[in-house]
Image 1 (cartoon, rainbow, N blue to C red):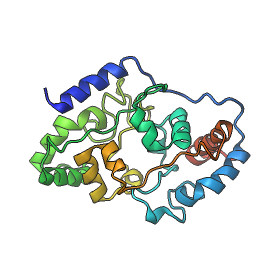
Image 2: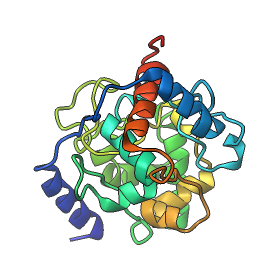
Image 3: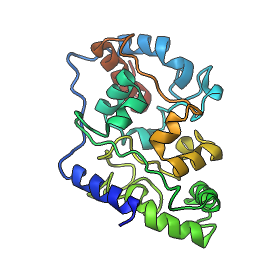
Image 4: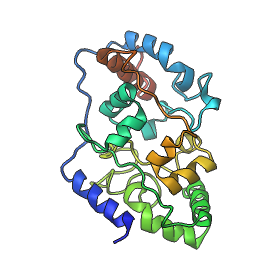
Length: 246
């Protein structure tokens, strides 16, 4: 059995007893307070309007999360957003759901499965999957063997691990967090350089981020209380994602 099949078997078993975790704020969410804390701590990267283009965005790779990308953001739970804000994304993903209300399934490494040339072909395919289609038979074969369980047959991030009921893309909350990428979502895919994506496929998400070559969300547990973080999450969800007026 290949390392990939072992990983998939373990992930499937864990998901059998896991379900998406929804937010359980300890008190009412105050959007005005959330807006103020967002402006102070988050806008520098994610932008005042949540477009991922704050003053520091060009100095980061991956680029900051785009909160106004409703297609992708609707697949993330509030509990996941809270945990990432409190603990930092690397810490949350490394826990792989231990002690959490949801399962994280970090992308595994494919260095032993794919050559450097095939990895580059895979990135090229990911850039065009919803446009001109497959560029290479090798990329097509690798995608079918390794990527469909998470990213889906058409690369929309709706495979059976995140979307076991196979609801329409854009209309489901992913059962694994963070949600697998939708290759056809320009706002999502434009956050990543080809070099970053090649490293992600080669090393896997955790090892790639631990290489210190890239930036990732740091935790604010030493700066914000849990209730303050919930105010920020509420502001992001209700105002930036869903467009509610304050």
